[in-house]
Image 1 (tube, rainbow, N blue to C red):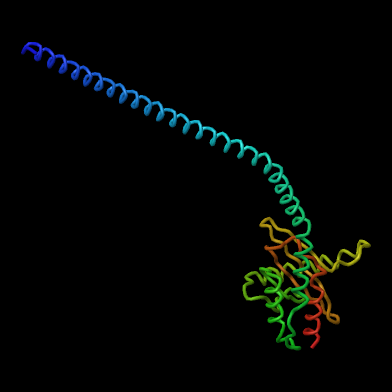
Image 2: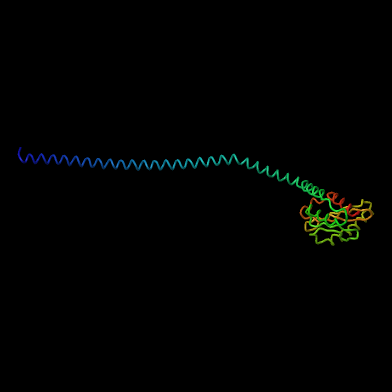
Length: 235
């Protein structure tokens, strides 16, 4: 074989090898590009799936919340009606309960001295048990005989009581029964009860001023305290 033929064969072999190498490089580049596109498409698809899943979860949560609200609405309405019924019931029974509380407190006054020295203590206990602002015991002449410690209007109440005694004496002249109690309401929202009672031939007045429960101050609540006062005044 001549030198030219050998050179030609070698050149042909090198050309074939280079062509194969370049073809392989191009195929490898195409494969990498295809892989990158596939990965990008897969990432985009996963992101889209995540967005759809998030939207679906939010939609389901909204539907669940709406369903719960629809279920709870009647319960809330019923609960509100129950609360209104309870408040209405308490409004109805409150006068009875308050009157019973006052009655129990006034009937359970402690046993004190059997002499007139116990008048002040009895009046003080009466004010404490009933939660009254003022309690004054006065005689027929309008003079205060005993009052609770916090009372600052004893002379005024006693003077008013004497005027009420005069009024009580005049009522029977017109054919009506003689009153034994007067209940006065003032502009400050206070209620003053004046209860007339006798010990022998002497008349006395028990005056009670209430501002915490004015609607429940009724004359018959003080039957027990007046019985105690009669016992002390008769000694």
